[in-house]
Image (cartoon, rainbow, N blue to C red; front, side):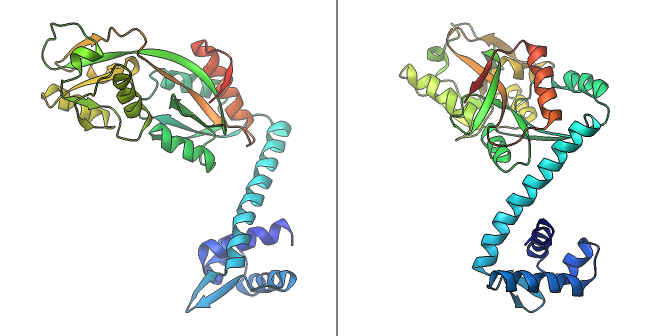
Length: 296
């Protein structure tokens, strides 16, 4: 069985129909059916069974599909690496950004495009937990994430530490500490189970406090409107303060010295990282003066 047959099989498995798979492969149906039959004969097992016009994978077919996807992906990555070396830098930069996006990113992308005009971009926005899953699935190559996320699967560069700000519709006259705001109705810029939400709860817990969280909201424009309307106050990293630029609210730096948010760039250790992604990492690290490479 060769790589060509494995590719044929993945398309058959995904399309669940020989005719549709043949059209996608730009070939006629009989030769594709013959290739499938040959694979089954060589392996000595049935890979598919039919129900009406649809094909379904047998247990053996499921196993083969799993390995075939990995093998063909590795082959594509290997070919892409060879092309990059032989033809110069080109290809797609596929990366994810945390819901609280880094504000210098647009300017950096403009600069990167000026240096590498042949590069195209795929940008995914999500919470850090989801971005790590996209890295595992190789949907993206690198991700700008909020720390901490503990895993031995990833390498990372720490980019910046940020202080937190407390934002409220009404003026605040007391000290601005976790203790003094613990009973204020809070809207967190992240939902339960996500990094920033859990980080905030843990920060209160370290001081023996339980915050009065009334809402988790990862939609920052909605969060801004809710704070303006008095639905609740919020506490956000410095990088998110731009959402309140035109808002009629009051903001205060939290006085807890050890309360900082950290963000950085992460990627999978075991996967090949394209030259496009490597150069973007170098540019990003240089632009923010990031430290040495770390492991999450």
